[in-house]
Structures are given as structure tokens and as C-alpha cells.
Length: 141
Length: 136
Image 1 (cartoon, rainbow over the protein chains, first blue to last red):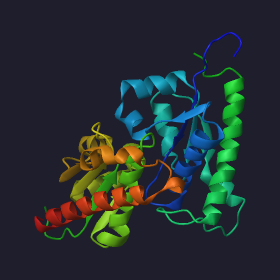
Image 2 (cartoon, chains in turn purple, orange; image 1 turned 180 degrees about the horizontal axis):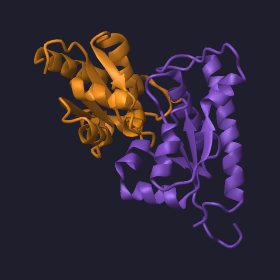
Image 3 (cartoon, rainbow over the protein chains, first blue to last red; image 1 turned 135 degrees about the horizontal axis):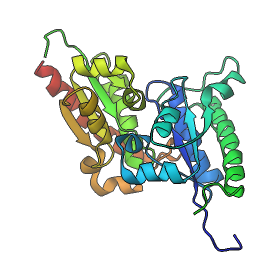
């Protein structure tokens, strides 16, 4: 940035649901974004830490742009970020899976090749959104 | 605890920010699928904390073990706040010490070090499951 101001990264927060492959998809899609596709523009945080009410985590979702990724319609990541005072841009795994009728992305423990392709597709959408949000100046220090 | 209790609930923090969260999550899955199938069930922590009654009631009526990645122990905290004391509480960073430093958050980078870490933690969980069931 020319003015030297440092933008805060966009927070990408998955539900990480442990009972279904959808939760693993949220988690791996998040790491694809934060570690590979947009490491300078994004970071993740522990959802459980936020729900516990850790002051730093609560402050982060109030002051940084957030993206949540949920695996099921119960939308735990979205709900918990909103409860903490955040206003997230919302993604759901279900929407992308609908574009792959009959998809079997793996298990709650491990993604197969199809699962990784879906995770990468979700991650690409999120990275594009994060880049736009970051460029728009949201999440600025 | 009732004599009818045959399952132990295991709650992982699954902390996204640290490798220990990934290890906790995978170790719980290992216990469910391989080490103690039929004797364990997992509870989805975000769902639990979001107020899902089914998850909370299970933790009230069954013994529970929390698996946390770090000493902040969010899984233990959430379980005890909403359902009562846990029967055992494990912390991955205490089990593995500095061994976790070279582990990965994403499973796409999993190495033998990651697999060994998951196995080590899973074994600890299985031992705790046996202890809990022996006392019910």
C-alpha cells in the first residue's frame, strides 16, 4: 500500500465439524486459502477460542473482515461469529457440492481426489472474495 | 454413572489455528473408527457450543473426554459449562511437547511425523476411554 497503512488480513473461519466430510472440507478449504492461495491477505483462527470468549478472538472478529465456511445448514461458524459481534461473509460447502451431483468427497477423516478438487473449488471462491474484500479496504488497520 | 452406559463421548477442540488442533481432530477420528469403535461417539464442538440440545444432552447423560490442542482447553471449558464435568481431559501439547512443532495443520502435507503424533494421542485417548468405561 502506498500510504504505508497495513491492512489486517481477512479472517477465514471454518466450522471444522467432526462428524461428516463436510466439516473436513471446510477445514481443508480454509488451509488452501490461508496457506497457499492468499497467505498475505488471510488468516484463520480457532472457532472454539472465539466461542469461549477469548478477548483477542472476540476483538478480531469485530475489527477484521470475516468469512465463515460451514459444512451443514446449522451454520455453527456463521452463528458463533455473529454472536461474538462479527458480520461475516458466508460460504457453505453444500452450495458447491450441489454442483457435483453424486459426489463422494471422502470421509470425515480423509478427503479423496474428488474431495480435494471440491475443497480447491471452494477455496478458489473464498480466495477471490477475500482478495476483493481486502482491496476494497475492509479490514483496514 | 448408570450401568447402562456403554459409550463415551469424545469432544475435540479441532483448533484451526494450530497443528495440535488438527492432531486432536484426527486422533479422535482414529479412536472412533479403529481403536474403540462402538464404545465411543464424537460430539461436534461448534454445534455443541451453538446450543444443540442433542449434543449437550448426550454429554450430560454419558461420560465425556475432552481433547484440546493447547492449554486454553476450549473443549473442556465448553463441555463443563454446558453439560457438566468431563471424565478426563487431555491436551495435545502436553502429550507431544515439542514434537508437535513440526506437524502440519493441513492433512495434505501430512508426513510420518504427523501420523506418529496422531497415533500417540489416539492411544492416550483409548486408554482414557477404557478407564472411564471400567468405572461406569
